[in-house]
Length: 248
Image (cartoon, rainbow, N blue to C red):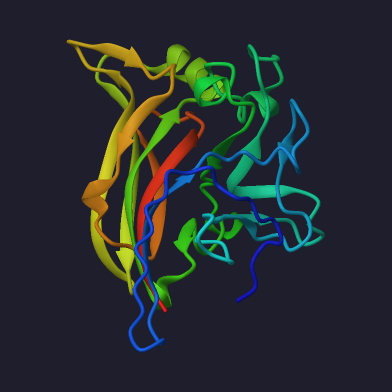
């Protein structure tokens, strides 16, 4: 399987259970924490995408030798331009006023807990500019992956657009759909902006998003849904947790 050359070791709380069956079977269960701490490839206050293979970036635990999960994106044919999917962002601080960079700048100014790096997902309406898969479990042939939770936030550009365009009754929702062997396993959704008559709110800080309803998956699809046109389809993600069980 061809994957990105980027390999990072997650500083995660890992519980490993190993058993030997006549020297032939090894089992491991652990919780994988993806912090997006790619400081070895991402300069401060900049964006990063895979301009070598053009596929995205993976994350592994200290248990395995290969990436466990993969965050995908699509780039231009010459691999010089990001088109859609996941990208790593090191953009910090208040909005710059540049619409392009503010589309990838988290509204709260930094990653979760002040981390300098986080992920941003861009859903281009032109499906030709999106990766075939948004996120997938690399080791699906050897075990299961059950998403637990992550933290999400809006970008500076999304907050600006919502404040300008939303009126009573408008909503912006992020939906995640899980699949296993191409069969749907479940859905999870969270409101990123809610302008109902009783509550006008916008997510402007890192907010927990429970994913346990997705069940065991081998890939995830992300989609943004707005009741008003002209709202950028971007959201920020940090600190994702997945329960993984492998058997070799």
